[in-house]
Length: 160
Image 1: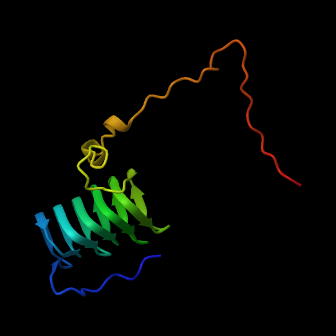
Image 2 (image 1 turned 45 degrees about the vertical axis):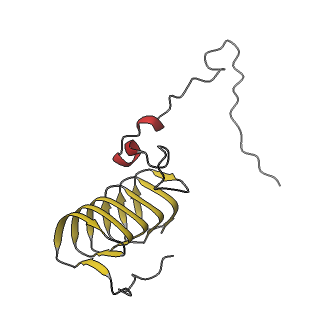
């Protein structure tokens, strides 16, 4: 579904190499490739999480490609999760592409402007994992508990 892991085709690129562990905040106007372990926040044009990489923290980018593991929220215009990807966090995106062998544990909020200033486009509670304002109480249906029970289960119908 997704292309092979992208090569470093850009001369201006931040790389956290295999075997390297880093923490903090990365802010880049270009690409960030994480191949090792990173704990913190990433804000970039493109963020690529490599096949054996582990990121623990928030990633904001125009495009995010995940081949490894991310623990934390993702926000981008386009997010791609490859076959080996494992994301444990909520996702806010205009488009998302998920390989059928990728794992996504979290909620997905689709919005045309994930970086918009409106509360619906950037819900802090949603990104932090507390669904707060998105939870709705489920009301009991009108027919529940009434003397006349008009509920009839739908039976499967097969045309022959």
